[in-house]
Length: 253
Image (cartoon, rainbow, N blue to C red; front, side, top):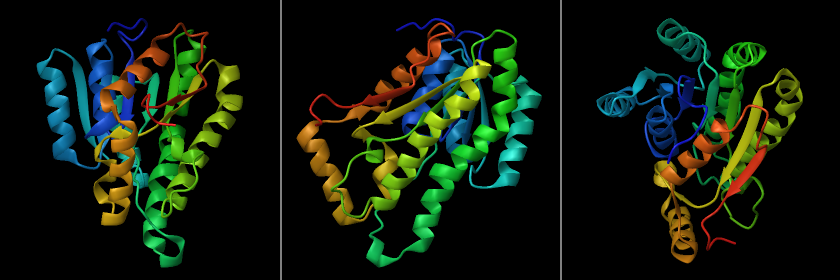
């Protein structure tokens, strides 16, 4: 599938070592964008970048931790040195843990907050100047935040903190439009439903059984399905902003 307005753009994708982030990076590069891939797993993200390069795309692998100020600062400097300013940022890095409140696993709560919320803020702040400058020059500029339908759903014991972090991302995205929209920067919040990724790899047996049950009952999206959505919304004419998109497997209710 071909998307307009992506060739020649410079994108940053966090959590690009696997899953949705990897698929987004590969798809944007296939459409002619230069893509900086950020992830903690440096070897894995390098392998993804090499795959893109082998297919004729442009990619830069950057080992970075979105929960660490110094790591993000170093990543921004490397991207600017290699590619200059960016005009498309995809905040995809995230972690999902099953943490019942009565277990009081404060370290796991903090890990999700640091990655899913503060990490989004840190990356957004780091590239805000790039995005507003691109828009001021009359070019497309996009901030895409990958949230989750967990921002709205209840009835899943153990996922209260995860859902709360994703609700924060959804609400943050809406509020950021008030800051960025008048400056010509599009903000899009994407909320995937059940998706086959590595996100559930850290769940305990009970939580994994719950997720497996959802997949069996409703089916699941592929990471590439979400990548197509990202490419579509960022490839639209710059005066069109799809503000919020919930993407579900057809069988999920």
